[in-house]
Length: 334
Image (cartoon, rainbow, N blue to C red; front, side, top):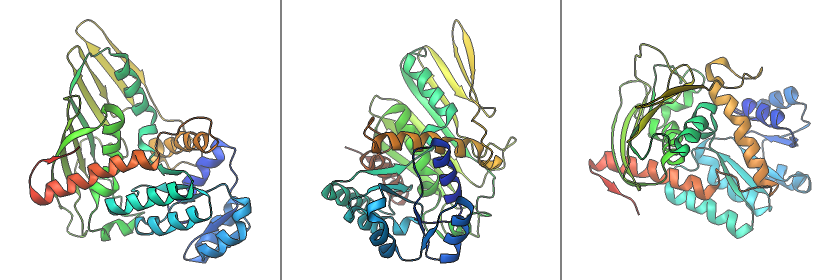
């Protein structure tokens, strides 16, 4: 459901994983659905969600929602009513209470809800987590997770200019999820935001300081207004300090670890797929691993990582960051 910019890469990711076949496409502009369907060899296209679900209910196992965030709640509820598992793009919902409605609707219908939160599946980020879990740097006490870029993200996604809440909702849902993936849940959040680009409605800079439940201080910085010496887009750069050493994820996809007695580097380039946009290579490669994990969850081979319940905790951080910025105070989390 949704055949815009991101859908082609999502479908290519499913093709790479295997084990899933597209049956029907929906888009509010039917011609867009037909254009994508021709490329992927799909016969059934609709501009009416109810018609699609009614005609193909018996053939479908799950629905992958790749539409604007404002449609996620209504589409999720419709799909759940048909007894189908739901995969939904991030951000999960525009507001926290609406995300709760999505979770509740799926639980009441007895179906699974997954969020396609793919950044945590990037190869270098998985390697940071693996090294961190070895304990080689001891107890982590400070971290920095950075996504600061001058990339013109509005060129291929112009609708982002119109969002009243931009960077925290768009890229922040990824970055704060990475923080949770690496370090667990947060106890408190303090955030400052800014709008540098006069042509957009929302904020394009955000600085978020979190105290995690294990005492670690986690600083997450995001910007689409930066002028970096080396353009990192779409990479996330990470530094984690522990009492025995440090882990750094650098611009060249290398993860460098050093202690007082030794150091080593783990090269972590993304898999290069022919269908991936070179500007988004590390992100597009992570779609495959994210889809594979979700499919394993649907097939009941394992519990998938990025469930609706899990992603709700990421959205809580986004919501708390916005509240903190509005009220200029630390927000305490349960």
